[in-house]
Image (cartoon, rainbow, N blue to C red; front, side, top):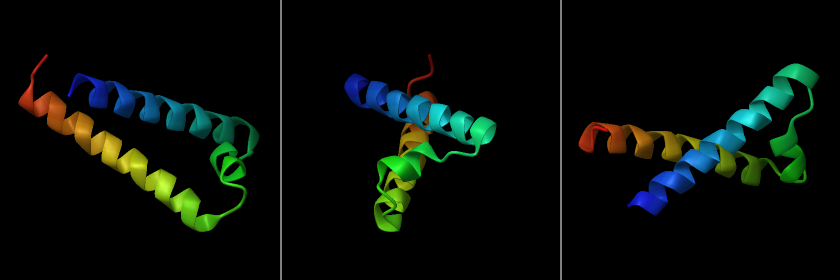
Length: 64
């Protein structure tokens, strides 16, 4: 359970850094990593949603 939370945090931090690069430069790093494949791109974006929902559940269930 702890490892899953750490992995989800790492996913969200990586996506946040990618979004920061995109906002500052206009270069979409995540789309570049996916080699322009739209299906893989959307799948990785959905992982961000799943990671955020997991962290929300973790914060509700195990109040720090």
